[in-house]
Image (cartoon, rainbow, N blue to C red):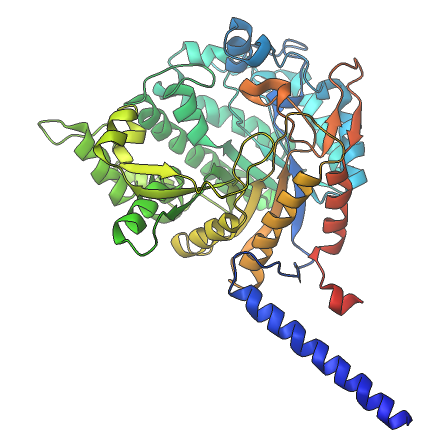
Amino acid sequence: MLHFKRLVLLSIVVLSALLCFVTTTDQRNSTNAFYYGVLPENFTWGASTAAYQIEGAWNEDGKSENIWDRFCHEGGHIVMNLTGDVTCDSYHKWRDDITTMNEIGLKHYRFSLSWSRIVPDPTTGVVNEAGVNFYLNFITAVKQAGIEPMVTLFHWDLPQILEDNGSWGNETIIKQYQHYADVAFSRFGHLVKYWLTFNEPWVTTWMGYGTGQYAPGTKQPATLPYLYAHTIIKCHATAWRLYDTTYRARFNGMVSITLNTNFYAPKNSSKPEDVEAAERAAQFMVGWFAHPIYVDGDYSQVMKDYVRRNTNSTDGSSRLPTFTDTDKLFIKGTFDYFGLNHYTTSLCEPSDAAHQASVPKGYLGDMEVKLTVDPTWPKSPSGSYIVPWGMRGILNFIRTHYNNTPVIVTENGLSDPNGTLNDQFRIQYLRSYIDELIKAVLIDKCNVIGYTVWTLMDNFEWTSAITKKMGLYYVDFDDPQRRRVAKQSAMWYKRVIADRGFPDPVLIG
């Protein structure tokens, strides 16, 4: 009888294993099935913020005005004419921020430095020691808490004096940015493992100087985005070369850039023209900056061809600037990893005449792609489309196009208009996107080494101000103390970090 019971038990175990195998096999072939998996111990989990969005103290302790200060103070650009003058008040409440990081168990914390707080007048280069000391105290405390600081040098808040001095069109800014980077590397380098030179230069160039939706509000879509991106790429390479030659041997950190991109999928994958349109959209979006840095020091051929043909010049010239051979050698290979911000997906097909006529002449028209969505995709409370399989798609795009460079997802998250504490919709979003990341790592062998939620706490979400809530923590903006309260997603994320993903319940009982 005992022997029979053992046989029955053994049969149940074998059957369970077979069922588990069948489920896993199905998961490998599905974009929808949930895939249980645990990431390596050295995989790093974090959360992100940015200086203008959380610090406040806009004119304290020697900080100068930046373009977002000016943009908000002008009025008419931001919902309810709100400003980031105080926002989360992290300049004074940074100890509270570290408490929230510890509560979740973050492995890293991504934040940005304010250029205008450290070097208020970049034309003179004089360092503001009060600003340096603020960041030194904060970074030291983060490090002492057992959390790796991940520092972004530039997150859209250009000192206003540089904007007035020709902005990114005046190439003296390259030396001024190099000086700022040098101050940051020399003062904080012993504490910082991960550096990012720029956050989302696509947003800086297109939304700041093309559409004018973001600071400084300039609308020259045909020329300035290309011209200013050209300078930013040179600034990035200059900072990376500086670290590589002067600081790497001493501090052994990693320097990269964060690029934002949707995943671009063909509207109809059986149509070659839609497949080509998806590739073209990706090259105009992420490839605009990634191809020079991660491939060959130059823009992709498809981008050069399409901008030239849409320039319509009689001499064959292009609105896309040209890198010299020296530039290309200087830019190529200026990375240690790939910083990726990803939120959603777009469907692509070639642009028709009606669509071409509807978009501004310049960057959007140059790519000749019509971007749409599948109306059956679920939408968040704030209206963004939730497409988890796009995370796996974009990670595989990086794997195949950029030699499987190590990737840290530096932003991924979801907004809502209410800031509810029981944010189950955010948990479902994060769960589904992280699961697609796990598939990309464990099934597709994408070289992903970190993941970062946007954002640690509700903050000043640019033109949406405090009406758009994306935090793991709720911030009471009516409370002078700016009280931080954990949402359900914070405690859920804490468990994910501790488990390193999603352990299979069959295996753990």
